[in-house]
Image (cartoon, rainbow, N blue to C red):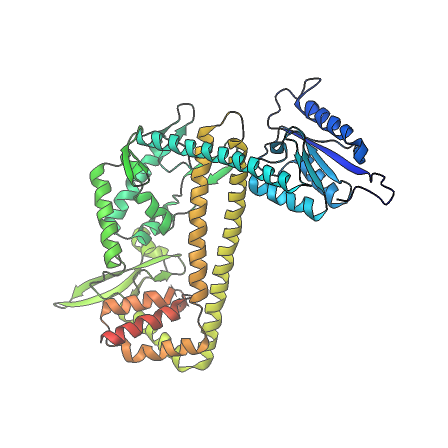
Length: 519
């Protein structure tokens, strides 16, 4: 900044004094910490009067705000005045009054440099007009950030020690337990615990995640519903495959706690016995290797898990009967009719060979008709675009949550007394959020990469006829599962609606090419 005119007279330098205190303690006093900081800044400005420095009357005081983020009202006003050209120099008592974050400080300095604003720290005797002042400032901020990282490391060490002692260290509550915040431990919720035991038994009975999800939907059972400290309702969502799998593999239910790859005995009471838990894990591992009960298909049910009854809004299960000697008759029946009686469903039972042949013929017909290829491709793209938009919307929500969590973590870490329980819970939530962001990105990448074109759809369906008859019933079921999202049957008007998976045609092409190479 050039402070001299041609006549060697000082050019006025408009100086703004910024003050901050992390807590509100003592701010009600007649002469508080903010007043002391402002007086020091004013005295320093007065000492530079020969350089033309002038103290602005506007006060920029942030009392009770952390320096770990930039969400401070006085700082926002100061930055706005700088961008409006009302300030030439910012004076603070110490560098950490402006910011305790190296990243935030760098952003602030970018604004200062853009508008030719000088920054001065009174007690540290340097300013940004000199290269040495900039160097010293970055060194000080690096040490401040190092101190915060040490605090985070100590917090993580404390969390690890608590886990190894089996203690509850916070996080989102899970179904089956309530949190006794006074004692800092989990206590069994008997009503929910009964649901947990039933869910484990349902999985052992069905040996399929989707079948259990459908059963839980019918019963109206949801994930844990809980209230935050701010009084907001969370949870209470319908189960899906992921949330059910997480529940079935959670060692908390056998009275243990996990820390990374370690298992330790927990202070809380178990809900599920170890033998039942291990049986469930064995079935999950077996299903992971074999593809699950949906694919283990000894009777050749090609639409198992895909066929749904439209009037009842539930799945149609595969069954069979033996008549006239050893002749077996296969059919699909609405699960609602099975459980509540045939009068409650217009779809009744449906001969399996007929509906399976109809669906396969629909796939063949698409391959023979270019207009059907185009309409099917358009629908697949619409589904893909809808799925991508939903994922991107969720990603924006998760990113907003992570930003809020990061702000809260910095606020707690910079406080004089650190709430380690709260910090641990926030770190755990941040971990969940970061993992979910990675999962969302993987899913977005997969959908974008697997978007197909018209020629690819035609090629996939051209491969369908010559290979289909050579496949075993299990392989045929696998192909339909890749290609089809859902088959809906309405027994009241005898209509069938086939919904294809958005990425199903590329998956089908890859699968059939593999099968053709093998055969």
